[in-house]
Length: 375
Image 1: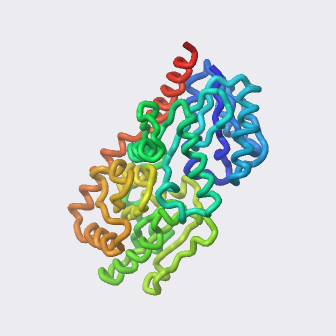
Image 2: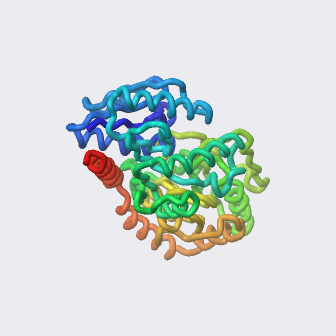
Image 3: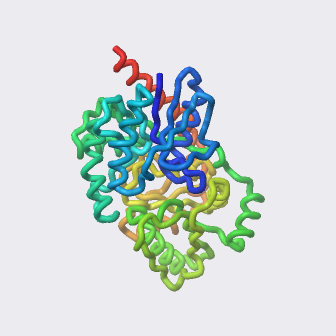
């Protein structure tokens, strides 16, 4: 069997959501299936570390696909021709984009369709492209993998896709996330936050991530509690113009780190007092699982997929209500019993999430499609 995979988000200098998902899946399925041949499609120079095994061939296709016009060119011209040239049996796309004109069987991984619910959260042209093409991708795909039941339900509701061709496969969590001992935490906090405990947010600075309301809630929390805390925000702005206003009373307490390495990110997570993660739309919410693995309590929004993922390891708030977010912060800092309960629940629940299992289940879908098309 020859499998082609869209790996355009494997970027050595800046791995983020789609990139890490692709890395965790592709590194595993290529190594665990040496009898198969894999052709990885990149849109720029390939870092040697992404040649995961001897059964992997990396192909660079032009142009660099980072704009809707170039998406169309890349998938409908370059990818379609490459699928035919390399005699591919199955095409797997971890970011959901596929070739509408190819006759090769295709599996798309669709993480969320937030643009259908909040189209104004992203630039007009990108929103128009996504809302035009993703219904077509969903209908064209022979199989669809979603990362949550929420996304599956959205696809069935919005695009009228048969639920029978959709399989929900949760994300895993990196082994670099683990519970830290108290001395390690103290040393890290002393070095990076002047000994001040902190709430942590991890994710892009994007409207649906709700960072402005989180900051405003933190300001109210500091004003009411008079406690010594910081709010650390790890991530970069996804779109130009995503400016944030910092209330004066927390101007020195809200810290933006920008993009961090996975190693440093795991240390920030493991040393956090709590994860404060309140998006109003989320397809999965990987930082929640990372926090659980580290034994860090979670305050999260009660919308979309977040309760499905966090379960009993979080206290929930209305992400549109800054007072509710603030109140949950107060609840957590005023209850040691609740804090310990959330830590224990999170450590236990984190065992449900494994990249080994995710890759195994994705591979099952590849094999299933190959068998069905070979009959």
